[in-house]
Length: 446
Image 1 (cartoon, rainbow, N blue to C red):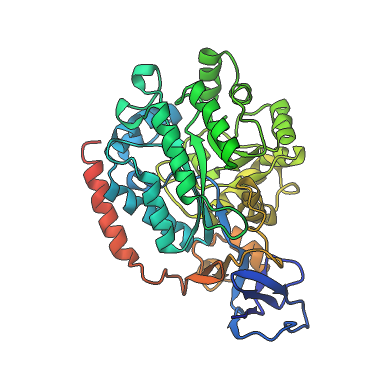
Image 2 (cartoon, one colour):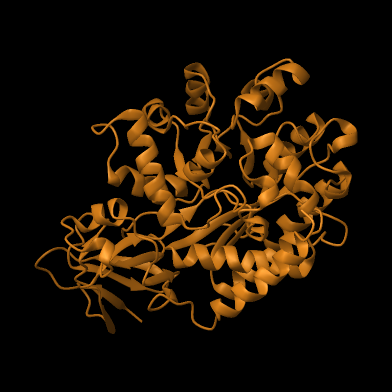
């Protein structure tokens, strides 16, 4: 069926004033002002009340953390003590809790206009060895694209790391499961719905051997790599003390400085290190809300882009950002980067680009993040009918400046996954009630 999304209030695309035509999951035509589709459409969706964006793409998250939002024991702490407060709680994760957490995170993202998400899951207590399989099931259930990273930690407290013994695994177990997941689920090429990436948690939670062997495995099987890096000055100090080098130097030593890699946070890089990232083609995910909550610092996004580094957006875990709302993350990134670089350097269009084409580049998806012929029909449609938008001028600017929170319609691969602000078939009120009950049980004595 050829669907004409007709006459939008505004659209983040050139030459599409009268909308776009979607067929078989792809965008097949942009309809310019004063024109009709070249081939008549079978159906029409009147988008006269909607601002149309490419589907937003979330490039860093920890789904399981929706169970520990605003946890009193972790409030008002910087990264390392924050982690120490939360790891014992996360060690109680089980399959039911994770299924609920993933469903909550993905549903919240989708309702905010997100069509593709990554997740960085690295906590594997006994009995939860199939954590990524659970995530795959939820993504398929909701119809969302996902790049699910097989995270890992093999340095516990007894080894000088931060996590308790009960959430880490040994190196061979991690690598065997990584290979299993790639062979079972990783889809290749345009239109892929489920992909697998490999993601040791951070340089201070895994051994050098695991870092290098993971890079080798990713190289052999053509999958991407992801990790946290340069999030805090404490991390820099830790790496200098224990490894004798800065985090980026260590990463390069482990074979990780390449165009297959995207890094979460990237706050504390020197100008010379930023140039090295650009030369290697390594991308960075900016997590504006989380960085502010934990007071980690401000990612130098504008400076990175001027140097040639690809930058996307991520909501980060819901225990630090306390939200999985990607359109809110767009506004937070806009405000933080404008504060850092000034009015003339950062516009609302920059922030929207980070969450779309920029994020697509982070995860190596040349078929996503842009409204043009041949791209996947992944779209987010927003109405401007709330009080927050009353009196607006530029509709695209209003989404960012007035603080859009919820999409009215979302399309993934040409199929509506959100209609009239709701996910068909999902009782979000019951989901929230059940999720709160699980969270109370997990955090009862935290």
